[in-house]
Image (cartoon, one colour):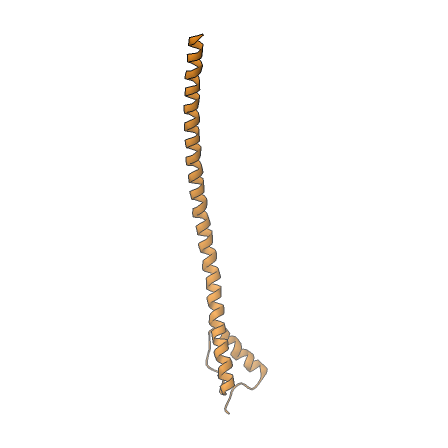
Length: 106
């Protein structure tokens, strides 16, 4: 066979260039076993790059989602505070009317 992979360094070079999906083509497997191993490493390289991009995009999306959720919660909290203050104000007004009515009846 006319293989260019003759040393461990050659095979390491081929493996790294395949896993990183660069694949220069200067060294290629010739035997059937070598091609099967190559297919495995090619899919492994594509999977690793995909996983890396997934982690990066998921991190950015999660930060953005968390920021939006925090803003929504703060907005809801402010609405609840305003509603509570409004109802407390109404209760105080009714209480003041009741006290005035009680004082007036005495």
